[in-house]
Length: 167
Image 1 (cartoon, helix red, strand yellow):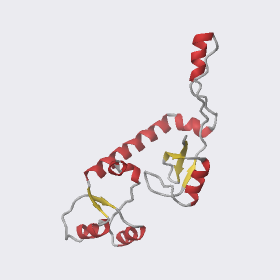
Image 2 (cartoon, rainbow, N blue to C red):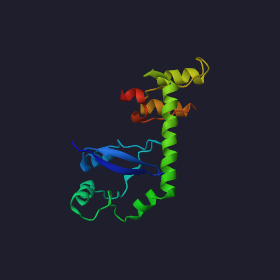
Image 3 (cartoon, rainbow, N blue to C red):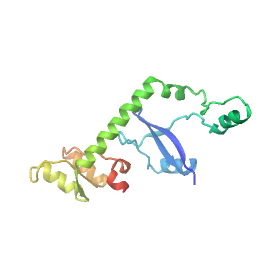
Image 4 (cartoon, helix red, strand yellow):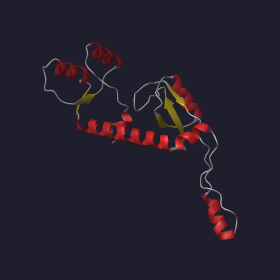
């Protein structure tokens, strides 16, 4: 099965990739609210215009073997977004996003996994009933909302950033 890789962007201009079985799978996940930005966790995500890419490496080999003119490895469309994303600002944005993702993964690795007891343990720490320490775990959207209303700072992290969940 070949996967479709789409460039996605959230309402806060964070750019990231999404891998889907098909364009229909992307549309279905978007309609169900399953897509979210890995940086800020917003679900207001749109598909960016992507540059067309063609695999033409075989043409280079043919030229070397038979004398044809080479064709660049990547043929891109002239879409303004594609040009902007490949410029210095796009490269800097990609570097910053990569650093953020690496930092989040490091924080997750160092945090204690309390599993489904996340809401309860967060409260115990917040109210001084348990040792102050970094924790991670699972909470329902309702539990997340309640914690926020109590003044307890929580942040949803997409599963793909948690290396333990990928194993």
